[in-house]
Structure formats: structure tokens, C-alpha cells
Image (cartoon, rainbow over all chains, first blue to last red; front, top):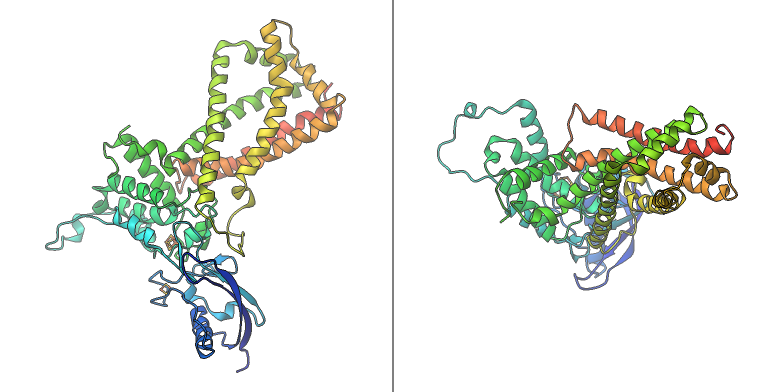
Length: 256
Length: 223
Ligand code: SF4
Ligand code: FES
């Protein structure tokens, strides 16, 4: 078809966590500009399987920008060159015929490579397990009007809740800091009345777990919010810092 | 303190960086105000009175110790954070696009190190001779000393070192000033734009006044 592209891909190949990886060059041809980036990888993998070679392992699930599984570092950008899209929502029309595209896994000590482009992000799960929830008794749903929430707070909480846990913030940050991710959850829940009861304990526990996982510290470069596919703002990090100060200095709560 | 992590966590380290940073900024305000007195162009008379007060007053002497402690904490914490942050990314990217952040935000360590070198020269030029004179109880003319450093035999060494020093200071502040507020949890829709604007103004004006001193001596504007 006319308008289709020929590209050169340089993809990180690594057998497993223990082995040494390298960038391997693969030419792909006849790529439709309407394909998503992952569909282009499907084409390449088909090609590799036909040639009797090992296909490239990469994470993906929903392919509609909501699950946070896809995780490619493309030409130096987490989730590729476009703002506020995940890798699965990136289309090949964002590239030009003849382009060379370098694809690497997220790089962080806390996200070890499992294979090729797949990294282990269970460190995020362990952080969430430490406090990314509210404890409520089930039963009849309450009348919503029982819990008035100021519009500004509701909006902020909603925006923070948009985080899909993809880890692009960690991948982008020069310190591999997870503070955008952690702060999104801390802020979301601390802004809402349902989350206030456990606010101090939550922030202490989640920050302690974040440190234990070996993420770096935020130095406020602001790169994370630029590359975040969901536009999570670093204002959330300030909210987390404030919550942490409050929890450490004012409350009697301790990290558990 | 109710929880021990408060002193060792990643967030606590940021608080230390921010608090000491703001403290050092407050010192700059005093320093730059006193320096500005030389532009009265009265042969350094007023300036020397102020400098003499700073060198002898007991409260200022005690605060000076606090200043050095603050500076050392700032440096020490920055060093620890840098090491930890390096460890957090053991494998680098083959391709890294840097457009998502400002170069000076990513280079605070280098800018800080340049500042430290400058500071060593600066202390050697002015702080040390003043200390010696105060200890010996001799008369000390700081204004003449300025003139000597910036127009004396080694002006071509000192003037560039000072200019480079204050340029590093400017970029260090450009990131550090607003960053300190963010780290302390202050990010507010109404005030943050104002803080950023004040930060930018401060980062330009303060280094500029510092830079004008050696230049004014060198160009003979001040005598
Ligand atoms: S904050 Fe953004 S980049 Fe980080 S995990 Fe959430 S959605 Fe992904
Ligand atoms: S595959 Fe679900 S967000 Fe990309």
C-alpha cells in the first residue's frame, strides 16, 4: 500500500534477568501508518517466528491506554514521542518512513528486566498494598450527599486517580524516583473524606515501602509529569510531602 | 519524633535540602544588601562600617557558625542523595531524550560543585584575611581588599572565577528556589506562580549585583 513505511528497529534483547542484554537491529517493512506501535511489534514478531527466531517479549494488555501494562522506552521517551499517550495508543503515523527507532525497557533498579522489554513492576504493587486503599465496612451504600466534597478537591482527587501505574514516571526520572506514582495515590485518597482516616498511616507506610524498593529520590526536575501518559501533576508530590510532614511531625502515627 | 524514618527517609532528605537551601538563600539576601553599599561610591566608607559590624558583632558571629553548619548539611545531604539516586538506575538508556526537563535542574550537583570551588576561593580572598585581622585586633579595610583582588595583579584569575561562580549561583537558584517550596509541600494554585516569578527574579538580580562588583572595579567605575 502506498504511504506504508519501512523502518529500522533497534530493540533491547535480553534472555533473562541474569544475562547481559544488547540492542539488536531489525528491519521492518510495509508498516501502515494507522498501526499502533504494538501492532507494529506484532508484525515484527510474526516475522521472527516465521524465521524460526525467538519473538520479542513485551508487556501489554488492554491496548486502549487504561491498564498501564505497556511499557516501552522509545527513542529516549517513555511511551514514545507523543505527549499523554501510552505505547499502545501511539500510532506509526508519529514516525517517518526510513526512521530508526530505538526501543528499550524501563530502566530502574526497582524494575528489574525479566526478559527483553518486560520489566518486573511488582514493586508498585507492594507500595499499593501498603496503603493505596481505604478500609470501609461493606453494607448499604450511603447517601452520596452525606459526604460533601468541595469541587476543587474532588477534581484534584479525580485527576490523581487517573494514574494507571505504568511506571513511565520512574522510567523518565533521572533518579528512577517513584514519587509521582506514590504521590498520585497518596493525594487522591488524602483529599477525600473516605481516605482521611488513614491518611497519616498511609503516607508513612507507602513512603517507607517506596524507599525499601530502591527507588531514587525526587529532585524536582519535573520530567515525570511531562512524560506521564495521564498528565499526573507534580502538585501531587507537594501534597505527599505535606502529608508526610504532617504525619511525621503532628500525628502520633508510626510507619508499620 | 514519633517515627524514626522521619530522619532517614527519602522525603526527610528532601526536607533537609529544602530547609537548608532556604536558609542559605536568606544569607544571600544579607550578603547582597551589604555588597550593594559599595555602589554608593563613597570610597567604601559605608560598606566598611557594615563589613566591620558583620566581622565583630557577637550575634553575627554565632549565626556564622549556623551558616557553616547549614552549608555542610546541604552539601552532605546532596552527596548522599546523589549516590542513592545513581544506585537507583544501574543501567543507563542507550538513547535518552532530555527535553522533558531543564538542564540546570538535572545539573544541580555540578552547579553546586562549581559553587563550592568558587566559595573556597572567595573565603580565601575575604573571609580568611578578615578573621586574621579580627584575631590580631588590627585595622581592616575590606573595601581596599576588594579593589586589590579585582584590580590587582591576579585580576584575570579572580574576575573570571567570580563571574563563573555567580553564574553557577544563578542557575543553582533558578532550580533551587522554587524547588525548596515544592519539597516542603507548598504547591498552591494561587501562590506558586508568584513564588516561581520571585525565584526567577531573585536568581537573576542577586547574581547580577554580585557580578557587577568585580566588573565595576575592573572598569574603574568605583575608585
Ligand atoms: S504517574 Fe503517570 S507515569 Fe507514573 S505510573 Fe501513574 S500514569 Fe504512569
Ligand atoms: S496496553 Fe493497557 S495501557 Fe497500553
